[in-house]
Image (cartoon, rainbow, N blue to C red; front, side, top):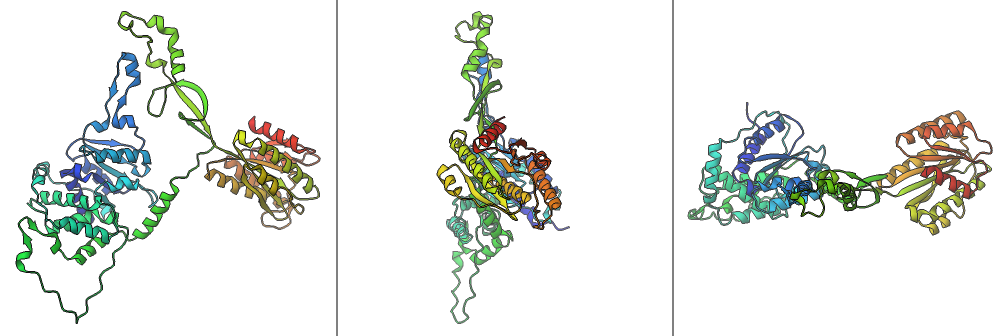
Length: 560
């Protein structure tokens, strides 16, 4: 059975990395669990040097070491924990597509120090939008993505350890043609590669492959093979082929025979440019342009994200009671709480050996700071503007919104206003904290028509989802009598309208949107109570409520 060419390329890349790990920096393997992925991880176990597995959540203390506060307090002297980076070797990171920007920056600094480290990124992303940070990938020489036929490979063949050791000894003696680097830079420009690391890494790979093949100089074939291993994953465009020459144009005379070689070995300039370009272009992914578009869009969206209602942390926000724990980079010590915990035991802990220490603190005394960071809350006022009492209800809603806005700055609340009437719902006031804008928008509100309660709840659900995407916490305030008579399809049917409203209300409850339903009917009805139950919301029967009462009741219900 013929061995897939892609498997041979993976083996050659691994062999080159084993010969020059500090120069080539590492490799990216983009593959989910498959036989070739398992074969790749098995081959990593036979790589020379120390090999360690890390994960995207590794801390700076684990990676670079740091002061062990607990041990230092117990022994009365600084005790430092060593980090994994203090021993040169190979790091293999699974689920590399989850690597954060901060860890990527620290790993990049580690690779740039030339401390003998190499990094293997095992990328398990399901699509082009899931990938390790580009800056980290750029520092690694090789990027392989097995093809369909390669996924069936169950073993990868590495040279014997003795051959790798011999090649590593020959590496420093490999000569390079003087124009080889210029050829590699020109090829990089043809494929839209603007990183200067690419030709330098390709040159490193060529020297490692030449040492592996027992050559004394980098040959044209080795230079081409190195470019095929390094360039395809970095290409940003497909180069255009040159048009055929005119038959009438005189041909360029061949170079003299004595210029094909030099004292150091074959020159890279003798290799026809178009042959090299076509060889590399054949290895480009077929969907390279689509991948680049998705990658750029993903980078543009990376800066914005929503975090939800409450976020526990140790940096900022509302202080919470300190708790015992192990100090680390992510957990800060509360000095006052720690000293308060240790103070009652000072006399019992005092011995001749620690008499010189003013305060004796044990690791069990350490208390860590905690904070609760609350995101902005959005109050979605959804008002029933149907029927003869619409004007009164909207006037009450207007006053309640203005009262809520008056306290928005202190409580970091935003307010939005939805009105439903006739056969649909309308967003009258987008999320805002501006009292002036709210009064301008609420100056005149139309009313009348049927009661499309389901449409109002659908509009509230869409607005809540949009608010969560912006990192806000939506809360629903629904003012209605619950007497729905217009279903989502628009046909006049009270039964269908009530069923639609209850169905949409149940969907809102599954989204986890808290809320309050204010029953504005003259006599509290069972339909409004049922809607509140489906919503999982607090039910407030206020048949003759004014703006002040609505605002106070809603505030009490939401804060309670």
